[in-house]
Image (cartoon, rainbow, N blue to C red; front, side, top):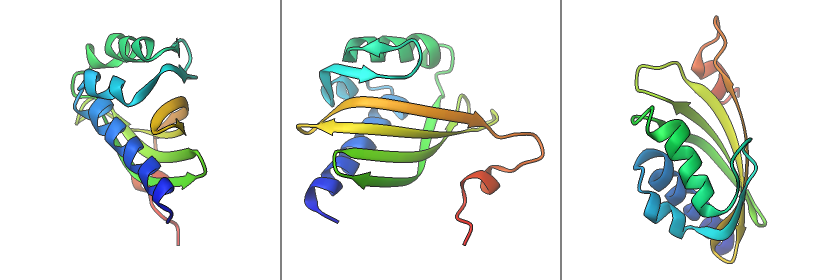
Length: 131
């Protein structure tokens, strides 16, 4: 793996840990470009808006919210993560795919899609390797 792809993956890993798991929003903001574009519905543009939206919609009502990355792929300026999100340790999980665009060593753009684990399906069926 090239040094730049590894650096991009390390940046995304650091951001996910700081933002979603540690709720260290100052550290997370330092990893985003000032005009960070978050394409998650209702969030919009700007690192401050991203942090405030998450704080209002997830961190305050669900302080134990966590995101656990199961796999990560990097290509060019993009990093994809396939993760498990939980609003609390005992809450039903959701499976999430995030796409991150890196620009000059910071996160510049984000897209995501998620789905709950349907009744009758296990989390392992949705995120494990089928080899």
